[in-house]
Image 1 (cartoon, helix red, strand yellow):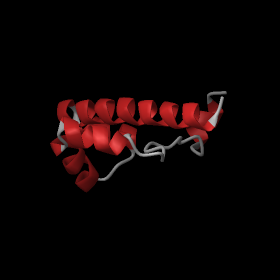
Image 2: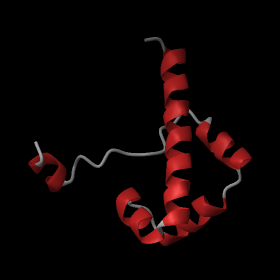
Image 3: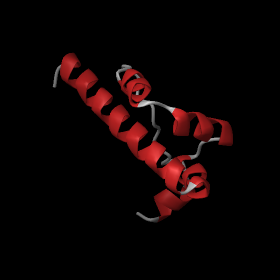
Image 4: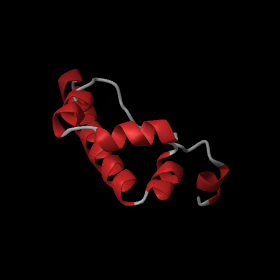
Length: 78
């Protein structure tokens, strides 16, 4: 996998994550705050993003979500 493919994959993950996160925030805010590990302020901003803004954010070459495998619960499931 070359660098261009990796960047394209990051952008796809970002878009999927933002769309899912926005949907979750809009449908069940309390669950979104818990499951996404975001603040109330971040949830408010995420809920108000337009599709154009989501596309612009998703096009970043930085992964917007993070893995929370540092959680003991996750490791205990193994």
